[in-house]
Length: 454
Image 1 (cartoon, helix red, strand yellow):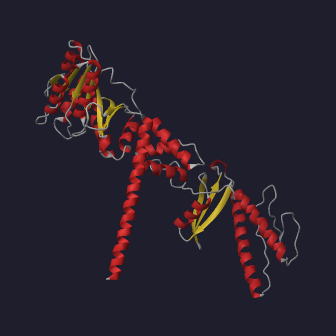
Image 2 (cartoon, helix red, strand yellow; image 1 turned 135 degrees about the vertical axis):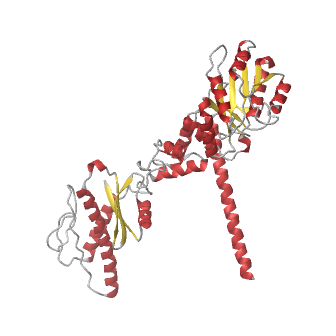
Image 3 (cartoon, one colour; image 1 turned 30 degrees about the vertical axis):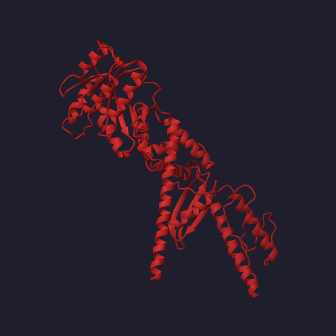
């Protein structure tokens, strides 16, 4: 265990001094206000269940001894310059520990490491030798203490668990990527790299990819019954067109059927009707109060459609019709009979804020969500919020839409590529902000110069 005392005019300055000397494995033992300002005592390799007050005090006294030696050295230099008698140096007593330590005597006679006494008025060379010995000892005591630590702060979401300086830096980088704080906290707590920040960040990125649930490649190519749910403007109908077009190319138009339960908006069926006409597939509409499960039973049973896609209305949760549509979807998802049971896929537009995406998940969760689809990748500037929803809810990511083209702009996801793209977006955003800040500063300086001229 290695202990050190820090003094500052205020607590922030004292902690800043801690940040310059102690590393990520250190803890703060105490902090108090003293006559000189604020005192913070921190330790490295400190185990709370094996506290040793004598050892702590011994190392603190060792530090005080070094500080006295430094003050004495400055005083002797001043005395030499002024031609005054050189002051004597007398060590203070410290708790002893097995091994070579500074011993103390009742008299004022200084004692060196080897136990040999000096005269009552030591020479300059003997005092300098003792000073250098103490400096070497302190250098050895503090050789492994480095960097900065904030162990007293805890994490943002779990204040009971300390978070080190390195973890706090990694956590902040996760925020730049757009990750939710709770996911960031979980990721950085799993980092094992302790020395190199670059390698530690790579480990964070790998953990992001591991945490992101991704459905099996080609999972929708086998067919099934899927309802796309989500807010208005999320891209549900366009995504249905892309999925239907892909399946028609592979299996023919007779294998696909489209169903719309969006009877709440004016001309709600027009876009889907255009898609069905172009692709040559069947389109069925189900009005509020009708049995969606019965329609699906007909399509997957008698007509043997391999892929049935259901388009839903993007209703707000406060809309009186929302609960009716939700109940219709739940009945279809739990129906029993021939053919595939319907599964709901949450459509998450990447242009929405993280809180909106979380609320969308909560609103449609009662329908029984089987996965999610990211849309509008080509329009977004941060992947972190949507990735956080998928990771924290364990909702598998099934597809990604990155443009308006049918069926080209629809792909199966790759977790590693998504994480790298998310980091790249964060770097670009930071560069833009830095450039904007530099330009703003230059403009302010130019304005100030012009005002000075006038």
